[in-house]
Image (tube, rainbow, N blue to C red):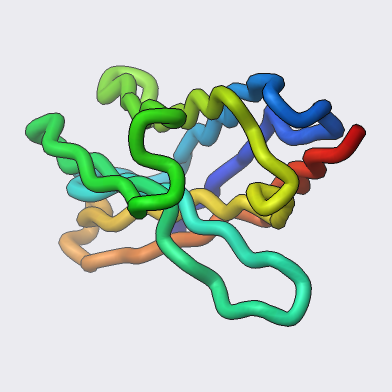
Length: 120
């Protein structure tokens, strides 16, 4: 089993910044892709940013240039630094990781979600 614990959400004014953190634990052999998704009320969950174990990154267009995803492989952790936040960034943000467990099973795990609310 692989568990993800997220932190760092909250209320921020437009133009402000937040840093989301996610740490994976459990019977992890290796982690391939780590990413952040978000889901706003009434909308589908969408990819915000992802990073491979080699450090390649991918961002959705609406956050590119305002956000930076990074990871610490030693800690099985992924981070999302978000700057110049806009009200449309308001959503529940979910961490997602894909990898292999110590028993050789491929896993894809989700965190419980952390709320980001951008409002003045």
